[in-house]
Length: 340
Image 1 (cartoon, rainbow, N blue to C red):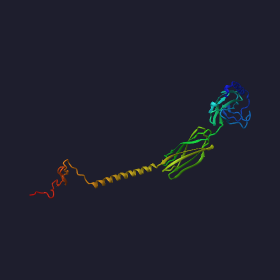
Image 2: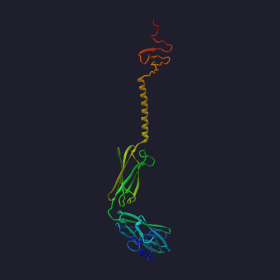
Image 3: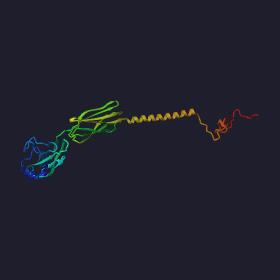
């Protein structure tokens, strides 16, 4: 159980801090001039090459794990340090949250990690942080909860867009974006492979390569990949495949259409001009085939322009049928004259 439930422990811690009057460990890295924080040596009370750079604890759900944090003060005056946990901080219980370390003294501060009963097996990182005069020291705490391990990895939000000085498919480089999500309970170091297939065949293939850093359980990592020479005219499917230890595997894809917009605009202009020209030619041809239209007044008699001659239809609408040739202007109509 946490130390706050046992009052006797606090007195023991203060006594331990007072009696540990020995030189500060040579391997401790100072957080600020005059003091440092580090895990207690694993092989005994005296410093050794086997000093731990971090805490590594392992246990099943429901167990209580114990260790000690060493605070070293090689200077000639006392230093007061404040202690707290980070990450899995609610699981950490320090014997004291504030410790005053006398000059030329190394103080050991016990702490416990209570693993929750309902926690997911896997890695749960945290840290112990000491803050005092002149700075801060952070000591990592790597906690592994035993139990069935689950390695699961997904690839999400794959897209292709323009990058640098041009748009995708527009003659410039492209950028492939995607996200990796650890859906399991163990830390993963994923590898990613890229492949692109177009109408005219494969246009991109990159073998699987390891990514920098570690992907913790539940963590999401967003990545970008440069594609310097995408096709100028194609319909492409980009597939991103991620693998990791433990059989974890995920894949996702996205499509994009590469079109040379400058060339497409030129083709569209030519087609538009051709369509307009064909429309004009068709209208002229139709006009020649149908001939002129003769306008008529309400009585059914054709209207004749001055100086012209045409065949007119006389008579009413009901009895029309007589055709006459009418002359206008100064000329005479052939065949006309007085009859006796």
